[in-house]
Length: 214
Image (cartoon, rainbow, N blue to C red; front, side, top):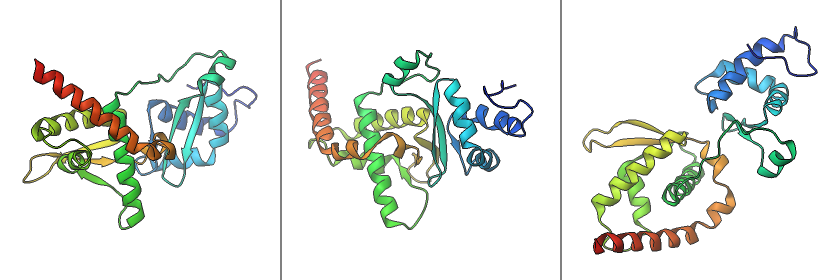
């Protein structure tokens, strides 16, 4: 059972709702479409949830328009001032994973601009094709697809995409791009995408050269 938030009444009717919402957030991202009841409670009590999260050294990120929320650590400067333990680990992403996240974010922005549907679903080949446009000619296609699938599986573990069933005909998995990626890939990252792609092209060329030497 959750301990009462300091400065609140333990018998407040908010307490049972907090006991539902906070554990859901501590487990991971809360999506409106997946847990409408907890989402409604969160929206109604977001102030109380923010206060409770602050006691734990966390802050609430809630995007009502996109329908997702999660708890994250305060910026490092604030953590140092608070001298609070970090409950949510910071994960260092590899460059290819970071780059794919940026490409998926760009795809989502283009998808939203069309405004025809709400769910962006991409096949493995479609993701590989989006990346292939920025790679040197002669890149090994089979190796590229394998690498993209490995990186997408990692991104799925992080919760930025959802792996769907294999597609008829191709036998490949499809991936739904989750809208939480908008909270992690900002406009500045997208603005620097061409530079990142150039860096990735150089990184891949060096890696390919090293493998050829072996």
